[in-house]
Every structure is written in structure tokens, then in C-alpha cells.
Length: 228
Image 1 (cartoon, rainbow, N blue to C red):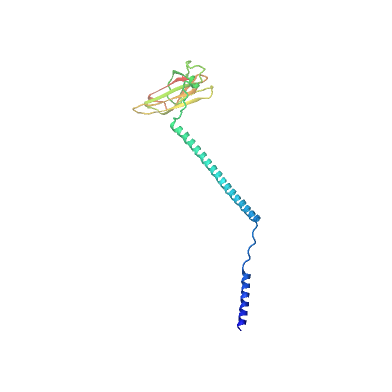
Image 2: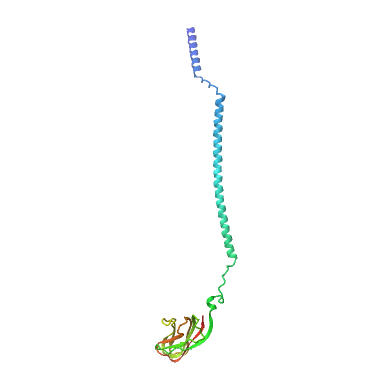
């Protein structure tokens, strides 16, 4: 029996040893030099590509930054120029154009001053008087400057319109009016005007009054005070 047990144990020990031997990992075959160099080359290529990508990204970022900085610089320069121009306007007094002198004006070069009395206005009710323009005013004159005035004191007659007219071409009339009122008052009222009228071909100045005739203290006059 002892011998049988020893044999069984021996057989079991051998079987266990054989089983353990089959569970051990097989060793990897050795890698060749060419394979290692190929792998290293691939890694170097990938690393170089990554480095180029990083450099390209940085370059694009720097280009964008340079463009932004350039635009900001232009804006700053434009603002500086605007501020400088505004400062010059503020610090430098504005140049005021010299008005044309009356002496240099062609119209006023032809102006001549005179004092030619003509006469008084009629009393009213549409009455009209005609005064010839004296030869003091030459036929070459294009316009005459007529002065007219009316003064009323203690007078009856109510409102009046006094007309001064000329006929430039012998037909149409050009005129202006003075307004005056006659009433019982302790003081005097005045109205006057200076008006340029065309020089009439017939050399006549027409005076007319509309309204109830004045009765009391009042006076008027017309005269030519210039021509051109």
C-alpha cells in the first residue's frame, strides 16, 4: 500500500509540473533594427509635422495681431490729426473776409450825391401834381434817390396815403407810399423815406394824395438827393 501511494503521488506531481509548464507565457521574438528605425522615423516625422503646425498657428496669430495693431495705429494717427486741426482752429483766430469797400463797388462808383428840391404833396382827395426833374440830373442817370416826408400837427383830415411815382418807359408806373394821419393833437407826427426809383424817360415825378384834405398844421416835401 505504501508503494502504491508513493506511485500515485509521483504521478500527480508530474501532472502538476506539466500543467504549470504549459501556463508560462511564451517569450516575444526579438525586434529587428530595421523595425525600430522605421518606428523612430515615423515618430520624428509626426513630431516635425506637429512643430510645423504650431509654428504656422503662431505665425497666423502674429499676422492677425500685427494687422490689428496697424489698424489701431491708423486710428490713433487720424485722431491726432483731427485734434491738431481743431486745436489750430481754436488757437488761430478766424480770418474774416474784408467786406467790399463802397469805393470799390462798381454800383457806388457811379453814385452821385445832389440836393434838388421838387415840392410838397397835394392836400388829398386824389389830387395829383407833377414836378419836372431838373437838368441837374443827367439823362445818363439810370436811377434817382427820392426823399419824401410828411409832418402833421394840430390838423384835421384823418388817414392819408401819399404816393410818389415815375413812369420809366412812359407807360408803366413805379411808385412808393407814405402814410400819415391828421388829428387834433398838441404834438407833431412825422413820416419819411428814401427810395430808389428808375429814371423816367419823360423826366417827371408824380405826387398824389388820397384821403380827406388836411386842414390845420401840416407840411411835406420831396427832393432828389442822389442818382446813379
